[in-house]
Length: 431
Image (cartoon, rainbow, N blue to C red; front, side, top):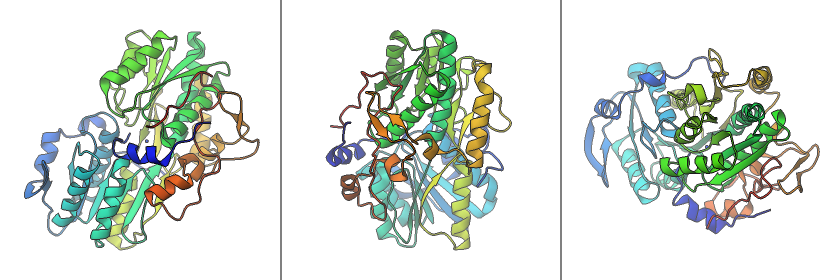
């Protein structure tokens, strides 16, 4: 098994762009999301600036909440889903809250300046939505103890004003694999392709979950993989999809941020599975099998209401299907499966989702042994379940490099591809 060096992980943080309470209501439908120009107009800019980013003004007498986005809100994926959560906050809390955002903020020094200037401006809560914002958020949190900082993904927090939020997308990727396997079996190809952005634990566990789900519905299926070393690059994403289609895959699962891979499959009358937001397959419904998506709105609402009530304390929150943080579009309440989903797999998918929503089948169930790697070596013994640290690949070196405390290191660290992947597939080095 390959082992990642913590030095490589440090280098990766400088370049990464992030993608990885039962829901009683959903965020506003995709079509209602305002254009970027309209959203900016809602938050008049103040004179304070951070590099080329103009810092929006606060509104007196309201809870002021700022979002820092790594991509544009119109990306149809990761940032779009976060912006749905922001709109949900406004819808639920009305005039008691004012939200603003800055989009396409690079990680590193630029993000630290933006976060610091938002705190100086007087925002009460600042949410930073990319893995590479982790250290900059932590640095600024120490400087502004009266401001609440929430980082999405990563693992760092403090005991006073800096919390962390992420979720078990591996559960939805398992479901995606089930649907993809059933489709590939009906196609007669028995081959599925998956696009992997970076060789980090998050991407590896999501890809592994998809392969395990695929093997559940198609025991003979093989998963191909392409590493593209980016979260958002329409050209590379499509080229990776076309490469796997050329190699015999008839279903493409993407872990990146555009619908290009699904479009590439559709162009050949095949099917794909998109990622991140409920609208990711808009216009591609006939060739889409579903979308593993994030539901940030209720999580954001819970945090803001706790801050308003004075009861919020920092935590490492990791949501799941059971609390409504993740879903698989086409199978959740009030949704219908896309037309290309095989009828034969629908009852089994619904059963698994029911178990996930009830909490009787979860990410730890998915990664319970016996599980072999794609070379036939046992990596998870029979009856053994991975821990959260195993899933997140928290080696001692990684924890030391990023200053992560209060967690036990992993013992079966997520640094392997499971059986189901092409035996020739490997995890590339980070550096």
